[in-house]
Structure formats: C-alpha cells, structure tokens
Length: 321
Image (cartoon, rainbow, N blue to C red; front, side, top):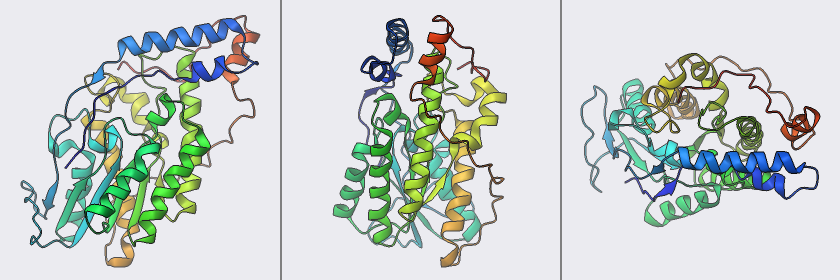
C-alpha cells in the first residue's frame, strides 16, 4: 500500500541558501536567487492529493489486479521505493502509475504472475530511503525486483550531493545483499519547470545533473542498475512541453510516467534475465558520456557577476507547465 505524507512540493531550492553561506557569492546574486526561491514556493501548490492505489497481483491479458493475500500464488514480487514520482503522484488512474506499468509489462512479456507492492512516500528524500527498505524487511521477505525513483527532493532540500548518493547506494546494497535485483531511476530534470525563474532554474538544472551522475556511480558500485531518466526524457520535455506535466505544473503527467516506465521496464527485464526473463522491450538508445561537472561550484553566480547581475537566458526552452 502506498504510504503518503503531506508536503509542500516546493522549489525552495535552498541553493539560494547555499549560495548565501559562501563568501564567493555577490550580495545581489544571493538576494536574487533567494527571492526567486520564495516566489516559486508561492506558485507551486502543496501535495495534498493521494496517489492512485495500485498494489496487487498482475497477470498477462490485463484486467484489474487481484488482491494479494498470504496464500495468493505469485511468480515475481516487484517492490517500488522512493518519492512522489515512484508513487505516481499526478496520475488520475492507477493504470497510469509507473509501478503498475512496469508490473503489467512484466506480466505481458513473461507470462508470470507479478505482485506489486509500493513502499514509496510522497516527499521522501534519500534520508528516508533506508527506512523504507528496513520497514520492508520487518514486514516480510525482500522482493525479487526493486525499482527506485528519487532525487528531486534531495535537490530542493539542498541535501549534499555526495551524501545523498551514498545513502542511495546503501539502500541498494541492502537489497542486493538479500538477493533482490535493483533498478534505479536517477534524479529527474527540474530545469523544465516554468514556475522556477531564471537564473534559479539553471542552478536547479546543474544540481540535478550533478546528483544524477553521483547516483549513477553509487548505484553501480552497489550492484544496481541506474536508469538516467533526465537524459532519456529530455527530448520529450523539450518537444512536448506542458503535456509532460500534471495539473500542478510540477509533477509528471501520465504521458511522462509512461516514458519513464518504458525505460525502467527495459532495465528490469534485463536485470531479471538470469532468471529466465527475456526483454522484448526495445532498450533506450546508448547515451553519450555526460560531460564532467564544471569545477566552479556556482557557475550561475559567476556569470551573474560578470554580466552585472542580469539573468542568463536558458539554453533550453522552458516548459509551459
């Protein structure tokens, strides 16, 4: 069952706070970013809705899921961990939820009975991820396959990049040590959200990219399979604009969740290949190696200082959100 807690889906990208804490930032840039973070908080609504409940047993041929009970036979147990994106927040129907899409895809492509359990929590960060995993160990045996989606809340809460990635790696390792295959959708791209003004949006974009790279390395080191959702879905966000956002202009839409689920499903099938699962999903095209992060910690502020405080234009068109 999905666990939900209320939170403010803000871009209190406390990046403004981080910049304020450094001696390298000019006062004008600091005040500009802090003011933009406050304004974004008033635009992006709170997360009060309950995501669709979608747990149960899925079989080939579609139809509603069967309610799982202790004597219900299943072949594979799929468990979802992470934040609001893992719960499918923003979806109107259960069939739009990424976990359901992955479960149905597994059932169709393997003919197996797939049990779906969602442990993700709206508003979660990496700090609470191991708690989700530990609670699962208390409740019962580990799943055959775990899918995780998180990162955006670590960015908006200004949790450290290295520490956030390490906590994710620890959670992956706990599951791998118990025999579960683990697939992780890394940090999404916040730079397409139109409620975030420039230059704060550029800061958000850079920080998301840094976290996604760190998550990728940590997940691989722990024995998991990272899926770079921001890179894979960037073209859709650039070309489809507002269609990729739900009504709140912040969380993904059903269409966006569909693209994410396709990428995750391909990785799940490959991860389970040793157990007789054959991937019939076309995997995403190989990605070019992402550029190394810039040495300057606050490149946007540096550009502001050089330009006399004017906001840089985005290299990508903003979403209509």
